Amino acid sequence: MRAVALGGGHGLHATLTALRRITPDVTAVVTVADDGGSSGRLRRELGLLPPGDLRQALAALAEAEDGGALWAEVFQHRFGGTGALAGHAVGNLLLAGLFEVFGDPVAGLDEAGRLLGLSGRVLPMSADPLDIEAEVTGLEPGDEVSRIRGQVAVASTPGQVHRIRVHAAGLPGTPPAACPDAVEAVLGADAVFLGPGSWFTSVLPHLLVPELHDALVRTSATKIVILNLVPQPGETAGFSPERHLDVLFDHAPRLRVDAVVADRDSVPTPARLHRAAAALGGRAHLASIAAPGVVGRHDPDALAGCVREALGLTEREREGQ
Image (cartoon, rainbow, N blue to C red):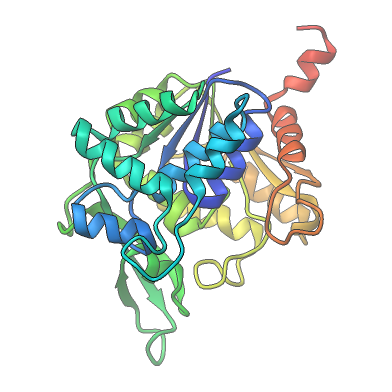
């Protein structure tokens, strides 16, 4: 099965870890709008794609390979101290070097995948850094709408995010160009996954890159949305599970999905989620997929089992297909 997962950060890491329990052919399509921390520093200083979310995806796929756990740990290791390297992850620096040597982030990521022995692939959603702009209420008296810019600002806002836009870095109003390999991967996939993750800064941006959005609408792949376990302070504070789907539809009204995967204990009103999933053309699948004792983290084995069910794989296996 050719699986493609779109997202960023820890949410995408969870999806990739689960998918590698189902198939070795996994492609990650990763957001490239990060402007904070080590990634933001490298982006500003070198003019490169922010490598952090790309690094996390590579590490997730490396963990699934024989002998890959050590290299995944090294890739994720951050330098301490107070010097110039403080806060930088080893993988971020390696990717920055590969991007400069190859002059092409896709070639650099493919080489990183080869070094890590990956059977899957990691791709940026765009070959150029992107900026996020959000419409937010609650920052000014009354219902006045404020506009804030930058992934970190949007992710940490104390206001309520209503809508985001994505554009080429430093060029407001200029539509972002999709990575051609990412578009090709979506069109050639058997299954495509959106979420979990920071809804406005990791999940929805993929739907706002025109070529990638069109590929998601056109692909014949089974499309599955994986919901978060808990609302995220700032971005989705107070959101119900079905509200996440409503926001997704508001940003991409042409998109239809086949299934919505959610944790049973995170859905207070299952009937509402079933109706929201049906409005997008799909069916809700509820199961216990949260990691025991860890708030906000999916259990990879349980998530993989629910995904298999949503794809109809368990039924086919029972029938011997």
